[in-house]
Image (cartoon, rainbow, N blue to C red; front, side, top):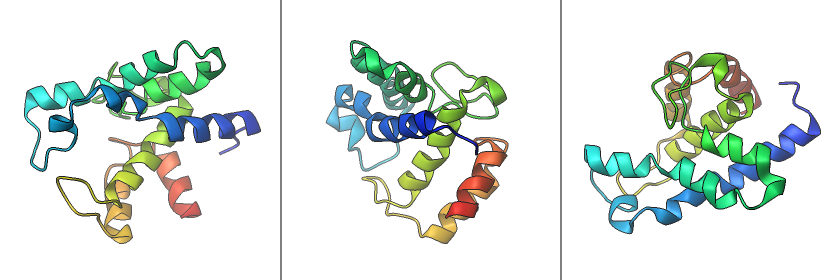
Length: 144
């Protein structure tokens, strides 16, 4: 996707740290084996902003903090925390969003077992241009 070495390194670092804000989420919400209530989901949605704030004192992570802050934005503008849409979402956040979603789908969660890779691929394809930037989905699937 024509990323520079610096951008690739930033996505790697952001990928490792993107959920650090979840340390502020109560285990009763984070590990809940059932569907979250509206209120519980509102708590979960704070983790990108909390993570960005946790990393703020580390001045070396400016770009990574921005990636982390926006990794749950959606191409259609229905994401969080800022409801950004399309190209307004930082490019590297869009990359992390697709990779994070694939990882989440293909690993066990307290509320559901892991999907098989084929089902996860189908979900990425189904959500291109709604949740995900289609160019990123296409690149991701080509590499996969």
